[in-house]
Image (cartoon, rainbow over all chains, first blue to last red; front, side, top):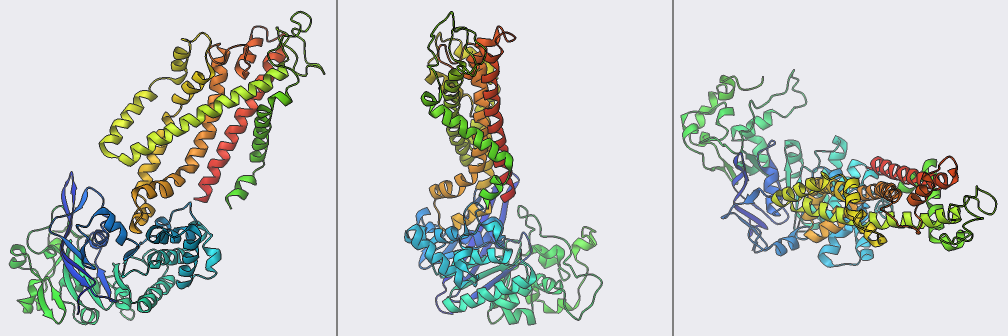
Length: 343
Length: 275
Protein backbone atom coordinates (compact mmCIF):
# COMPACT_ATOMS: atom_id res chain seq x y z
CA UNK A 1 0.00 0.00 0.00
CA UNK A 2 1.23 3.52 -0.77
CA UNK A 3 1.00 6.37 1.69
CA UNK A 4 -2.23 5.80 3.66
CA UNK A 5 -4.92 8.48 3.73
CA UNK A 6 -5.46 8.11 7.44
CA UNK A 7 -3.02 6.58 9.84
CA UNK A 8 -4.07 5.97 13.43
CA UNK A 9 -1.18 5.23 15.74
CA UNK A 10 -1.58 4.09 19.33
CA UNK A 11 -4.93 5.83 19.78
CA UNK A 12 -6.00 5.82 23.40
CA UNK A 13 -9.29 7.43 24.40
CA UNK A 14 -9.98 7.27 28.11
CA UNK A 15 -13.00 8.43 30.07
CA UNK A 16 -12.02 9.83 33.44
CA UNK A 17 -15.11 9.06 35.49
CA UNK A 18 -15.72 8.89 39.22
CA UNK A 19 -15.89 5.10 38.89
CA UNK A 20 -12.35 5.03 37.54
CA UNK A 21 -10.62 5.47 34.21
CA UNK A 22 -12.53 3.74 31.42
CA UNK A 23 -9.99 2.79 28.79
CA UNK A 24 -12.54 2.53 26.00
CA UNK A 25 -9.98 2.71 23.22
CA UNK A 26 -6.66 1.40 24.38
CA UNK A 27 -3.79 1.57 21.92
CA UNK A 28 -5.50 1.14 18.56
CA UNK A 29 -3.47 1.48 15.37
CA UNK A 30 -4.58 1.04 11.78
CA UNK A 31 -4.39 2.69 8.36
CA UNK A 32 -7.06 3.57 5.84
CA UNK A 33 -5.87 3.70 2.23
CA UNK A 34 -7.14 6.19 -0.35
CA UNK A 35 -10.33 4.86 -1.91
CA UNK A 36 -10.40 1.93 0.46
CA UNK A 37 -13.47 0.57 2.20
CA UNK A 38 -12.38 -0.64 5.62
CA UNK A 39 -14.63 -2.31 8.15
CA UNK A 40 -14.44 -2.25 11.92
CA UNK A 41 -16.49 -4.93 13.62
CA UNK A 42 -17.12 -5.79 17.24
CA UNK A 43 -19.91 -6.07 19.78
CA UNK A 44 -21.32 -3.21 21.87
CA UNK A 45 -18.77 -1.70 24.22
CA UNK A 46 -15.71 -2.84 22.28
CA UNK A 47 -14.70 0.76 21.49
CA UNK A 48 -15.51 0.96 17.79
CA UNK A 49 -17.80 4.00 18.04
CA UNK A 50 -15.42 5.80 20.38
CA UNK A 51 -12.66 5.17 17.81
CA UNK A 52 -14.86 6.75 15.13
CA UNK A 53 -15.67 9.79 17.26
CA UNK A 54 -12.01 10.16 18.26
CA UNK A 55 -10.92 10.53 14.64
CA UNK A 56 -12.96 13.74 14.38
CA UNK A 57 -12.19 14.61 17.99
CA UNK A 58 -15.88 14.57 18.92
CA UNK A 59 -15.21 13.02 22.30
CA UNK A 60 -16.76 15.06 25.11
CA UNK A 61 -15.45 15.34 28.66
CA UNK A 62 -14.89 13.33 30.78
CA UNK A 63 -13.57 11.53 27.68
CA UNK A 64 -10.14 12.49 26.43
CA UNK A 65 -7.72 11.46 23.73
CA UNK A 66 -4.59 10.68 25.70
CA UNK A 67 -1.24 12.29 24.83
CA UNK A 68 0.86 10.08 22.61
CA UNK A 69 -2.06 9.17 20.36
CA UNK A 70 -1.65 10.12 16.71
CA UNK A 71 -4.30 10.52 14.03
CA UNK A 72 -2.35 11.41 10.90
CA UNK A 73 -4.53 12.67 8.09
CA UNK A 74 -3.35 14.65 5.06
CA UNK A 75 -0.12 15.58 6.80
CA UNK A 76 -1.72 16.80 10.02
CA UNK A 77 -2.10 15.10 13.38
CA UNK A 78 -5.80 15.49 14.14
CA UNK A 79 -5.18 14.51 17.75
CA UNK A 80 -3.29 17.73 18.38
CA UNK A 81 -4.34 20.33 15.76
CA UNK A 82 -6.19 23.44 16.95
CA UNK A 83 -9.93 23.45 17.51
CA UNK A 84 -10.32 25.67 14.46
CA UNK A 85 -8.33 23.31 12.26
CA UNK A 86 -10.30 20.27 13.32
CA UNK A 87 -13.55 22.11 12.55
CA UNK A 88 -12.18 22.74 9.07
CA UNK A 89 -11.75 18.98 8.64
CA UNK A 90 -15.13 17.93 10.04
CA UNK A 91 -17.76 17.57 7.37
CA UNK A 92 -15.27 18.84 4.82
CA UNK A 93 -12.39 16.36 4.43
CA UNK A 94 -13.78 13.73 6.79
CA UNK A 95 -17.50 13.36 7.31
CA UNK A 96 -19.61 11.11 9.39
CA UNK A 97 -22.85 9.19 8.97
CA UNK A 98 -24.67 8.43 12.19
CA UNK A 99 -26.62 5.39 13.20
CA UNK A 100 -30.01 6.87 13.97
CA UNK A 101 -31.01 9.22 11.15
CA UNK A 102 -34.06 10.56 12.96
CA UNK A 103 -32.17 11.83 15.97
CA UNK A 104 -29.18 13.00 13.92
CA UNK A 105 -31.42 15.47 12.09
CA UNK A 106 -32.64 18.68 13.68
CA UNK A 107 -36.45 18.40 13.91
CA UNK A 108 -37.15 22.10 13.33
CA UNK A 109 -35.33 22.56 10.01
CA UNK A 110 -36.16 21.19 6.63
CA UNK A 111 -33.67 18.64 5.40
CA UNK A 112 -32.46 20.78 2.49
CA UNK A 113 -31.31 23.50 4.87
CA UNK A 114 -29.51 20.92 6.98
CA UNK A 115 -27.63 19.50 4.02
CA UNK A 116 -26.96 23.05 2.82
CA UNK A 117 -25.49 24.01 6.18
CA UNK A 118 -22.35 22.00 5.39
CA UNK A 119 -21.55 24.18 2.37
CA UNK A 120 -22.44 27.34 4.24
CA UNK A 121 -19.93 26.45 6.93
CA UNK A 122 -17.09 25.32 4.71
CA UNK A 123 -17.54 27.43 1.58
CA UNK A 124 -19.44 30.38 2.99
CA UNK A 125 -22.08 29.94 0.30
CA UNK A 126 -25.24 32.02 0.45
CA UNK A 127 -28.37 30.35 1.73
CA UNK A 128 -29.78 30.06 -1.76
CA UNK A 129 -26.64 28.75 -3.46
CA UNK A 130 -26.07 26.25 -0.68
CA UNK A 131 -29.66 25.03 -0.93
CA UNK A 132 -29.26 24.49 -4.69
CA UNK A 133 -26.13 22.45 -4.02
CA UNK A 134 -27.99 20.48 -1.37
CA UNK A 135 -30.69 19.56 -3.86
CA UNK A 136 -28.03 18.35 -6.34
CA UNK A 137 -26.39 16.27 -3.63
CA UNK A 138 -29.72 14.83 -2.50
CA UNK A 139 -30.28 13.77 -6.12
CA UNK A 140 -26.96 11.89 -6.03
CA UNK A 141 -28.25 9.76 -3.18
CA UNK A 142 -31.21 8.61 -5.21
CA UNK A 143 -33.91 10.59 -3.43
CA UNK A 144 -36.82 10.99 -5.84
CA UNK A 145 -38.02 14.56 -6.45
CA UNK A 146 -35.14 16.03 -4.41
CA UNK A 147 -36.28 19.63 -4.85
CA UNK A 148 -39.57 18.87 -3.11
CA UNK A 149 -38.11 16.51 -0.51
CA UNK A 150 -35.54 19.17 0.44
CA UNK A 151 -38.33 21.38 1.73
CA UNK A 152 -39.70 18.66 4.01
CA UNK A 153 -38.96 18.14 7.67
CA UNK A 154 -37.27 15.02 9.05
CA UNK A 155 -40.49 13.66 10.53
CA UNK A 156 -42.10 13.71 7.08
CA UNK A 157 -39.52 11.33 5.58
CA UNK A 158 -39.14 7.56 5.90
CA UNK A 159 -36.17 6.02 7.68
CA UNK A 160 -34.42 5.14 4.42
CA UNK A 161 -34.94 8.64 3.04
CA UNK A 162 -33.58 10.18 6.21
CA UNK A 163 -30.47 8.01 5.98
CA UNK A 164 -30.03 9.22 2.38
CA UNK A 165 -30.25 12.78 3.69
CA UNK A 166 -27.45 12.04 6.15
CA UNK A 167 -25.41 10.52 3.35
CA UNK A 168 -26.01 13.65 1.29
CA UNK A 169 -24.74 15.74 4.22
CA UNK A 170 -21.64 13.56 4.37
CA UNK A 171 -21.08 13.86 0.61
CA UNK A 172 -21.67 17.58 0.30
CA UNK A 173 -17.98 18.57 0.32
CA UNK A 174 -16.73 15.44 -1.51
CA UNK A 175 -14.68 14.36 1.50
CA UNK A 176 -11.63 12.12 1.33
CA UNK A 177 -13.04 9.88 4.06
CA UNK A 178 -16.53 9.01 5.23
CA UNK A 179 -16.95 7.37 8.62
CA UNK A 180 -20.17 5.39 8.68
CA UNK A 181 -21.09 4.42 12.24
CA UNK A 182 -23.64 1.61 12.02
CA UNK A 183 -25.34 3.30 9.05
CA UNK A 184 -27.87 0.54 8.48
CA UNK A 185 -28.58 -0.71 11.99
CA UNK A 186 -31.75 1.34 12.40
CA UNK A 187 -33.16 0.34 9.00
CA UNK A 188 -35.26 -2.50 7.59
CA UNK A 189 -33.32 -5.24 5.85
CA UNK A 190 -34.46 -4.26 2.36
CA UNK A 191 -33.62 -0.61 2.93
CA UNK A 192 -30.35 -1.74 4.48
CA UNK A 193 -29.32 -3.38 1.23
CA UNK A 194 -30.23 -0.27 -0.76
CA UNK A 195 -28.21 1.99 1.53
CA UNK A 196 -25.17 -0.31 1.36
CA UNK A 197 -25.43 -0.40 -2.44
CA UNK A 198 -25.61 3.37 -2.47
CA UNK A 199 -22.55 3.75 -0.24
CA UNK A 200 -20.56 1.33 -2.38
CA UNK A 201 -21.63 3.07 -5.55
CA UNK A 202 -20.74 6.55 -4.25
CA UNK A 203 -17.45 5.26 -2.90
CA UNK A 204 -16.37 3.93 -6.28
CA UNK A 205 -17.70 6.97 -8.13
CA UNK A 206 -15.88 9.57 -6.04
CA UNK A 207 -13.01 7.34 -4.88
CA UNK A 208 -13.86 8.23 -1.29
CA UNK A 209 -12.48 6.07 1.47
CA UNK A 210 -15.10 4.63 3.77
CA UNK A 211 -14.63 3.47 7.32
CA UNK A 212 -17.58 1.18 7.96
CA UNK A 213 -18.31 0.56 11.61
CA UNK A 214 -20.75 -2.19 12.39
CA UNK A 215 -21.52 -5.16 14.57
CA UNK A 216 -22.90 -7.00 11.54
CA UNK A 217 -20.46 -9.30 9.77
CA UNK A 218 -22.90 -9.52 6.87
CA UNK A 219 -22.47 -5.80 6.21
CA UNK A 220 -18.68 -6.27 6.37
CA UNK A 221 -18.76 -9.17 3.92
CA UNK A 222 -20.90 -7.25 1.48
CA UNK A 223 -19.07 -3.96 1.42
CA UNK A 224 -15.51 -3.93 2.66
CA UNK A 225 -12.20 -5.23 1.38
CA UNK A 226 -10.35 -5.25 4.67
CA UNK A 227 -11.63 -5.71 8.18
CA UNK A 228 -10.51 -4.88 11.69
CA UNK A 229 -12.00 -6.77 14.61
CA UNK A 230 -12.08 -4.86 17.88
CA UNK A 231 -12.51 -6.29 21.33
CA UNK A 232 -12.21 -4.57 24.71
CA UNK A 233 -10.71 -1.39 23.29
CA UNK A 234 -8.11 -3.14 21.17
CA UNK A 235 -7.62 -4.41 17.65
CA UNK A 236 -7.66 -8.20 18.03
CA UNK A 237 -7.54 -9.18 14.39
CA UNK A 238 -6.94 -7.46 11.09
CA UNK A 239 -7.29 -9.20 7.77
CA UNK A 240 -8.36 -8.92 4.16
CA UNK A 241 -12.05 -9.72 4.20
CA UNK A 242 -11.79 -13.03 2.26
CA UNK A 243 -9.05 -14.25 4.57
CA UNK A 244 -11.13 -13.52 7.59
CA UNK A 245 -14.16 -15.40 6.40
CA UNK A 246 -12.06 -18.33 5.21
CA UNK A 247 -9.77 -18.57 8.22
CA UNK A 248 -10.53 -16.41 11.21
CA UNK A 249 -7.68 -16.72 13.67
CA UNK A 250 -8.74 -15.00 16.87
CA UNK A 251 -11.23 -17.03 18.95
CA UNK A 252 -13.35 -13.89 19.33
CA UNK A 253 -13.65 -13.51 15.55
CA UNK A 254 -14.41 -17.19 15.34
CA UNK A 255 -17.16 -16.72 17.91
CA UNK A 256 -18.64 -13.80 15.97
CA UNK A 257 -18.75 -15.94 12.83
CA UNK A 258 -20.42 -18.82 14.63
CA UNK A 259 -22.94 -16.43 16.08
CA UNK A 260 -24.12 -15.50 12.58
CA UNK A 261 -27.29 -17.38 11.68
CA UNK A 262 -26.75 -19.34 8.47
CA UNK A 263 -29.22 -20.43 5.88
CA UNK A 264 -29.32 -24.20 5.53
CA UNK A 265 -28.04 -24.87 9.02
CA UNK A 266 -31.18 -25.25 11.03
CA UNK A 267 -30.74 -24.94 14.73
CA UNK A 268 -33.00 -24.52 17.71
CA UNK A 269 -31.00 -21.68 19.17
CA UNK A 270 -28.42 -19.25 17.91
CA UNK A 271 -24.81 -19.69 18.92
CA UNK A 272 -23.59 -17.08 21.34
CA UNK A 273 -20.25 -16.12 22.78
CA UNK A 274 -20.69 -16.76 26.49
CA UNK A 275 -20.31 -13.81 28.86
CA UNK A 276 -20.03 -10.12 28.04
CA UNK A 277 -17.29 -7.60 27.34
CA UNK A 278 -15.58 -6.79 30.65
CA UNK A 279 -15.91 -3.28 32.11
CA UNK A 280 -13.57 -0.77 30.44
CA UNK A 281 -12.49 0.53 33.86
CA UNK A 282 -11.10 -2.89 34.65
CA UNK A 283 -9.66 -4.74 31.66
CA UNK A 284 -8.30 -8.13 32.73
CA UNK A 285 -4.59 -8.64 32.93
CA UNK A 286 -3.19 -10.72 30.07
CA UNK A 287 -5.59 -11.54 27.27
CA UNK A 288 -8.83 -9.59 27.59
CA UNK A 289 -10.83 -12.36 25.95
CA UNK A 290 -9.42 -15.10 28.13
CA UNK A 291 -12.49 -15.69 30.32
CA UNK A 292 -14.77 -16.16 27.31
CA UNK A 293 -12.31 -18.17 25.26
CA UNK A 294 -12.56 -21.96 24.75
CA UNK A 295 -8.80 -22.34 24.21
CA UNK A 296 -7.25 -20.22 26.96
CA UNK A 297 -4.40 -21.52 29.09
CA UNK A 298 -1.96 -20.16 31.71
CA UNK A 299 -0.07 -17.99 29.25
CA UNK A 300 -3.28 -16.09 28.44
CA UNK A 301 -3.67 -15.02 32.05
CA UNK A 302 -0.03 -13.98 32.32
CA UNK A 303 0.99 -12.24 29.12
CA UNK A 304 -0.97 -9.69 27.17
CA UNK A 305 -0.78 -11.05 23.62
CA UNK A 306 0.86 -8.87 20.95
CA UNK A 307 -0.45 -8.76 17.38
CA UNK A 308 1.05 -11.89 15.77
CA UNK A 309 1.58 -11.97 12.02
CA UNK A 310 -0.61 -14.79 10.64
CA UNK A 311 -0.48 -14.24 6.91
CA UNK A 312 -0.22 -11.48 4.33
CA UNK A 313 -1.93 -8.45 5.85
CA UNK A 314 -3.37 -10.73 8.51
CA UNK A 315 -2.55 -10.20 12.19
CA UNK A 316 -4.14 -11.61 15.34
CA UNK A 317 -3.81 -10.78 19.04
CA UNK A 318 -3.89 -14.42 20.18
CA UNK A 319 -1.26 -16.72 21.67
CA UNK A 320 -2.64 -19.57 19.55
CA UNK A 321 -0.27 -18.21 16.93
CA UNK A 322 2.61 -19.80 18.83
CA UNK A 323 0.77 -22.93 20.00
CA UNK A 324 -1.70 -23.64 17.18
CA UNK A 325 -2.31 -27.27 18.21
CA UNK A 326 -4.32 -26.04 21.21
CA UNK A 327 -7.14 -25.17 18.83
CA UNK A 328 -7.89 -28.91 18.62
CA UNK A 329 -8.66 -29.13 22.32
CA UNK A 330 -11.35 -26.65 23.22
CA UNK A 331 -12.72 -26.49 26.76
CA UNK A 332 -15.70 -24.69 28.30
CA UNK A 333 -14.73 -21.04 28.78
CA UNK A 334 -13.96 -19.83 32.30
CA UNK A 335 -17.17 -17.78 32.50
CA UNK A 336 -19.12 -20.99 31.91
CA UNK A 337 -17.06 -22.96 34.43
CA UNK A 338 -17.70 -20.25 37.02
CA UNK A 339 -21.37 -20.28 36.18
CA UNK A 340 -21.38 -16.61 35.31
CA UNK A 341 -22.55 -17.04 31.76
CA UNK A 342 -26.22 -16.87 31.02
CA UNK A 343 -27.16 -20.07 29.21
CA UNK B 1 -48.42 21.31 8.22
CA UNK B 2 -47.98 23.13 11.49
CA UNK B 3 -50.28 26.01 10.53
CA UNK B 4 -53.17 23.84 9.47
CA UNK B 5 -53.19 21.78 12.65
CA UNK B 6 -53.12 24.76 14.99
CA UNK B 7 -55.78 26.57 12.95
CA UNK B 8 -58.05 23.61 12.48
CA UNK B 9 -59.15 23.89 16.12
CA UNK B 10 -62.11 26.30 16.48
CA UNK B 11 -61.00 27.24 19.99
CA UNK B 12 -57.74 28.58 18.57
CA UNK B 13 -59.61 30.87 16.22
CA UNK B 14 -61.93 32.14 18.94
CA UNK B 15 -58.94 32.86 21.14
CA UNK B 16 -57.03 34.62 18.39
CA UNK B 17 -60.02 36.73 17.35
CA UNK B 18 -60.65 37.68 20.99
CA UNK B 19 -57.05 38.67 21.48
CA UNK B 20 -57.03 40.58 18.19
CA UNK B 21 -60.06 42.59 19.32
CA UNK B 22 -58.37 43.39 22.62
CA UNK B 23 -55.09 44.33 20.98
CA UNK B 24 -56.74 46.54 18.38
CA UNK B 25 -58.97 48.13 21.01
CA UNK B 26 -55.94 48.81 23.17
CA UNK B 27 -53.92 50.14 20.27
CA UNK B 28 -56.66 52.45 18.99
CA UNK B 29 -58.08 53.33 22.39
CA UNK B 30 -58.41 57.06 21.60
CA UNK B 31 -60.56 56.20 18.57
CA UNK B 32 -62.56 53.40 20.17
CA UNK B 33 -63.30 55.00 23.53
CA UNK B 34 -66.29 57.34 23.35
CA UNK B 35 -65.03 59.65 26.15
CA UNK B 36 -61.88 60.75 27.87
CA UNK B 37 -61.31 58.04 30.51
CA UNK B 38 -60.21 60.46 33.22
CA UNK B 39 -62.64 63.30 32.54
CA UNK B 40 -65.21 63.97 35.25
CA UNK B 41 -67.84 65.91 33.24
CA UNK B 42 -70.45 66.33 35.97
CA UNK B 43 -69.65 64.73 39.28
CA UNK B 44 -73.16 65.31 40.57
CA UNK B 45 -75.56 64.66 37.66
CA UNK B 46 -73.59 62.02 35.75
CA UNK B 47 -72.24 59.89 38.59
CA UNK B 48 -73.16 56.21 39.14
CA UNK B 49 -75.32 55.96 36.02
CA UNK B 50 -76.31 52.39 35.05
CA UNK B 51 -75.57 51.19 31.47
CA UNK B 52 -77.44 53.18 28.85
CA UNK B 53 -77.05 54.10 25.19
CA UNK B 54 -74.88 57.08 26.01
CA UNK B 55 -72.80 55.08 28.49
CA UNK B 56 -73.01 51.39 27.50
CA UNK B 57 -71.00 50.31 30.60
CA UNK B 58 -72.44 53.05 32.84
CA UNK B 59 -70.44 55.67 34.76
CA UNK B 60 -68.50 55.57 38.02
CA UNK B 61 -68.79 57.66 41.21
CA UNK B 62 -66.66 60.37 39.60
CA UNK B 63 -68.95 60.46 36.54
CA UNK B 64 -66.28 58.88 34.33
CA UNK B 65 -67.41 56.65 31.43
CA UNK B 66 -66.71 53.02 32.35
CA UNK B 67 -66.49 51.79 28.73
CA UNK B 68 -63.79 54.33 28.01
CA UNK B 69 -61.97 53.32 31.16
CA UNK B 70 -62.16 49.61 30.26
CA UNK B 71 -60.79 50.35 26.78
CA UNK B 72 -57.93 52.41 28.18
CA UNK B 73 -57.57 49.79 30.90
CA UNK B 74 -56.95 47.21 28.16
CA UNK B 75 -54.20 49.41 26.85
CA UNK B 76 -52.47 49.61 30.20
CA UNK B 77 -53.16 46.09 31.47
CA UNK B 78 -52.16 44.36 28.25
CA UNK B 79 -49.27 46.74 27.63
CA UNK B 80 -47.88 46.13 31.10
CA UNK B 81 -48.44 42.40 30.70
CA UNK B 82 -46.73 42.32 27.32
CA UNK B 83 -43.66 44.29 28.34
CA UNK B 84 -43.27 42.47 31.64
CA UNK B 85 -43.49 39.13 29.80
CA UNK B 86 -40.91 40.31 27.29
CA UNK B 87 -38.52 41.07 30.14
CA UNK B 88 -39.12 37.82 31.98
CA UNK B 89 -38.85 35.67 28.84
CA UNK B 90 -35.58 37.33 27.86
CA UNK B 91 -34.14 36.90 31.34
CA UNK B 92 -35.46 33.36 31.69
CA UNK B 93 -34.08 32.18 28.36
CA UNK B 94 -30.73 33.89 28.86
CA UNK B 95 -30.23 32.59 32.41
CA UNK B 96 -31.51 29.09 31.67
CA UNK B 97 -29.54 28.71 28.46
CA UNK B 98 -26.35 29.95 30.10
CA UNK B 99 -26.76 27.59 33.01
CA UNK B 100 -27.51 24.62 30.77
CA UNK B 101 -24.67 25.36 28.37
CA UNK B 102 -22.14 25.90 31.12
CA UNK B 103 -23.08 22.73 32.96
CA UNK B 104 -21.14 21.35 35.88
CA UNK B 105 -20.27 23.62 38.77
CA UNK B 106 -21.51 26.87 37.20
CA UNK B 107 -24.82 25.22 36.45
CA UNK B 108 -25.14 23.93 40.00
CA UNK B 109 -24.47 27.37 41.50
CA UNK B 110 -26.88 29.11 39.12
CA UNK B 111 -29.61 26.61 39.93
CA UNK B 112 -29.17 27.04 43.68
CA UNK B 113 -29.46 30.81 43.25
CA UNK B 114 -32.63 30.19 41.27
CA UNK B 115 -33.98 27.94 44.02
CA UNK B 116 -33.52 30.81 46.45
CA UNK B 117 -35.47 33.17 44.17
CA UNK B 118 -38.20 30.62 43.66
CA UNK B 119 -38.63 30.14 47.38
CA UNK B 120 -39.98 33.71 47.70
CA UNK B 121 -43.73 33.97 46.99
CA UNK B 122 -44.04 36.33 44.05
CA UNK B 123 -47.21 38.10 45.13
CA UNK B 124 -45.99 38.80 48.66
CA UNK B 125 -42.65 40.01 47.35
CA UNK B 126 -44.40 42.36 44.93
CA UNK B 127 -46.73 43.69 47.62
CA UNK B 128 -43.80 44.33 49.93
CA UNK B 129 -41.81 46.10 47.23
CA UNK B 130 -44.58 48.07 45.57
CA UNK B 131 -46.04 49.30 48.85
CA UNK B 132 -42.94 51.49 49.17
CA UNK B 133 -44.23 53.81 46.44
CA UNK B 134 -46.86 56.43 46.96
CA UNK B 135 -47.76 56.77 43.34
CA UNK B 136 -46.06 54.00 41.42
CA UNK B 137 -44.46 54.84 38.06
CA UNK B 138 -45.73 52.39 35.40
CA UNK B 139 -42.15 51.63 34.27
CA UNK B 140 -41.27 50.52 37.78
CA UNK B 141 -44.31 48.27 37.90
CA UNK B 142 -43.35 46.67 34.57
CA UNK B 143 -39.77 46.13 35.72
CA UNK B 144 -40.84 44.52 38.98
CA UNK B 145 -43.34 42.24 37.27
CA UNK B 146 -40.74 41.31 34.64
CA UNK B 147 -37.90 40.71 37.09
CA UNK B 148 -40.00 38.41 39.28
CA UNK B 149 -41.45 36.31 36.45
CA UNK B 150 -38.57 34.46 34.82
CA UNK B 151 -37.62 31.80 37.35
CA UNK B 152 -39.70 28.86 36.25
CA UNK B 153 -39.07 29.51 32.55
CA UNK B 154 -35.33 29.57 33.09
CA UNK B 155 -35.53 26.24 34.82
CA UNK B 156 -37.44 24.74 31.87
CA UNK B 157 -35.03 26.25 29.35
CA UNK B 158 -32.05 24.96 31.28
CA UNK B 159 -33.49 21.44 31.27
CA UNK B 160 -34.14 21.60 27.55
CA UNK B 161 -30.66 22.91 26.82
CA UNK B 162 -29.10 20.13 28.89
CA UNK B 163 -31.04 17.55 26.91
CA UNK B 164 -30.50 19.18 23.51
CA UNK B 165 -26.80 19.63 24.18
CA UNK B 166 -26.43 15.85 24.35
CA UNK B 167 -28.72 15.17 21.42
CA UNK B 168 -27.39 13.41 18.39
CA UNK B 169 -28.21 16.23 16.01
CA UNK B 170 -26.00 18.57 18.01
CA UNK B 171 -23.27 15.95 17.73
CA UNK B 172 -24.03 15.78 14.00
CA UNK B 173 -23.75 19.57 13.78
CA UNK B 174 -20.36 19.39 15.42
CA UNK B 175 -19.42 16.63 13.01
CA UNK B 176 -20.04 18.90 10.02
CA UNK B 177 -17.75 21.55 11.50
CA UNK B 178 -20.24 23.92 13.13
CA UNK B 179 -18.70 26.10 15.85
CA UNK B 180 -20.21 26.73 19.29
CA UNK B 181 -22.00 29.94 18.33
CA UNK B 182 -23.58 28.37 15.30
CA UNK B 183 -24.76 25.39 17.31
CA UNK B 184 -26.42 27.63 19.89
CA UNK B 185 -28.06 29.96 17.36
CA UNK B 186 -29.12 27.53 14.65
CA UNK B 187 -29.59 24.29 16.55
CA UNK B 188 -30.39 24.98 20.20
CA UNK B 189 -32.50 28.15 20.19
CA UNK B 190 -34.91 27.15 17.39
CA UNK B 191 -35.64 23.96 19.29
CA UNK B 192 -36.59 26.09 22.28
CA UNK B 193 -39.11 28.22 20.37
CA UNK B 194 -42.04 25.99 21.26
CA UNK B 195 -41.21 26.06 24.95
CA UNK B 196 -40.62 29.81 24.87
CA UNK B 197 -43.80 30.65 22.96
CA UNK B 198 -45.95 28.52 25.25
CA UNK B 199 -44.33 29.88 28.42
CA UNK B 200 -44.64 33.45 27.13
CA UNK B 201 -48.34 33.08 26.33
CA UNK B 202 -49.18 31.54 29.66
CA UNK B 203 -46.90 33.97 31.50
CA UNK B 204 -48.62 36.87 29.75
CA UNK B 205 -51.99 35.73 31.10
CA UNK B 206 -50.52 35.31 34.55
CA UNK B 207 -49.01 38.81 34.61
CA UNK B 208 -52.33 40.36 33.58
CA UNK B 209 -54.03 38.70 36.53
CA UNK B 210 -51.19 39.69 38.83
CA UNK B 211 -51.32 43.31 37.75
CA UNK B 212 -55.09 43.36 38.18
CA UNK B 213 -54.70 42.00 41.67
CA UNK B 214 -52.07 44.56 42.63
CA UNK B 215 -54.09 47.41 41.16
CA UNK B 216 -57.14 46.13 42.99
CA UNK B 217 -55.13 46.32 46.19
CA UNK B 218 -54.29 49.91 45.27
CA UNK B 219 -50.54 49.35 44.91
CA UNK B 220 -50.43 48.70 41.16
CA UNK B 221 -51.56 51.19 38.56
CA UNK B 222 -52.33 54.45 40.42
CA UNK B 223 -55.54 56.48 39.92
CA UNK B 224 -56.69 58.29 37.87
CA UNK B 225 -55.06 56.00 35.28
CA UNK B 226 -57.36 53.14 34.38
CA UNK B 227 -56.39 49.49 34.60
CA UNK B 228 -58.83 46.61 34.80
CA UNK B 229 -57.82 45.94 38.38
CA UNK B 230 -58.44 49.44 39.70
CA UNK B 231 -61.76 49.83 37.83
CA UNK B 232 -62.95 46.68 39.58
CA UNK B 233 -61.74 48.26 42.81
CA UNK B 234 -63.80 51.42 42.08
CA UNK B 235 -66.96 49.33 42.25
CA UNK B 236 -65.82 46.94 44.97
CA UNK B 237 -67.37 48.84 47.85
CA UNK B 238 -70.85 48.64 46.39
CA UNK B 239 -71.06 45.67 44.05
CA UNK B 240 -74.81 45.24 44.38
CA UNK B 241 -75.50 48.90 43.64
CA UNK B 242 -72.78 49.61 41.08
CA UNK B 243 -72.47 46.13 39.55
CA UNK B 244 -71.51 47.49 36.11
CA UNK B 245 -68.36 48.97 37.52
CA UNK B 246 -66.85 45.61 38.46
CA UNK B 247 -68.60 43.34 35.97
CA UNK B 248 -67.33 44.79 32.68
CA UNK B 249 -63.62 45.08 33.50
CA UNK B 250 -63.93 41.69 35.19
CA UNK B 251 -65.33 40.15 32.01
CA UNK B 252 -62.61 41.79 29.93
CA UNK B 253 -59.97 40.36 32.25
CA UNK B 254 -61.55 36.93 32.15
CA UNK B 255 -61.84 36.89 28.36
CA UNK B 256 -58.25 38.00 27.83
CA UNK B 257 -56.85 35.44 30.27
CA UNK B 258 -58.93 32.55 28.94
CA UNK B 259 -57.99 33.45 25.36
CA UNK B 260 -54.28 33.54 26.21
CA UNK B 261 -54.39 30.29 28.14
CA UNK B 262 -56.30 28.56 25.36
CA UNK B 263 -53.86 29.78 22.77
CA UNK B 264 -50.94 28.64 24.90
CA UNK B 265 -52.44 25.18 25.30
CA UNK B 266 -53.16 24.84 21.58
CA UNK B 267 -49.63 25.86 20.66
CA UNK B 268 -48.26 23.36 23.12
CA UNK B 269 -50.39 20.58 21.66
CA UNK B 270 -49.37 21.45 18.15
CA UNK B 271 -45.69 21.39 18.89
CA UNK B 272 -46.04 18.11 20.73
CA UNK B 273 -47.88 16.43 17.88
CA UNK B 274 -45.32 17.40 15.25
CA UNK B 275 -42.42 15.94 17.18
